[in-house]
Image (tube, rainbow, N blue to C red; front, side, top):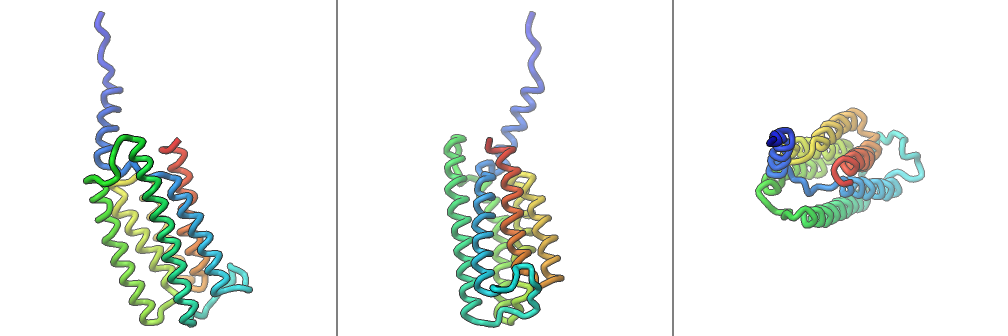
Length: 207
């Protein structure tokens, strides 16, 4: 007697192939965890630059007026960004090689474009804010535009990325309402949330 075909297995295989063709599956949860760790380390250094010896939760109505402090904060942010990008690229390349794929393909090209548009727009907007002395809402703008970039690129990423984007936007709006807590919101958004969602992705996709 001929065994009937396993349609469920065939459908699962087709679904897996479609996901691999539309999703950037080389993204690892570990890269999110490490990016969040870098952000928390950066936030700690920022605290000593602009807020010490006050508590990190103390409300700071004044803006960062000191030019040296502002330059140090920008350099610190660039260092955190560079460390996160290098780590993410290395881990994604390693996972792609393990899966027998390449990190640079049509899916990653679409992902790069979808991420870049909101990020570049946000970067220019933040530079305008800094030029005009609106330092109090810079953290808010970082979180909001980053969240928009994640949502815009979520079609080519895992579902958890979309919810991370929503969380970043909500936190960014809260930061705009309470600009004196910008450092706290920045640490939560780029640190704690990255570690939380990265851990979820690691348990679901990387193990």
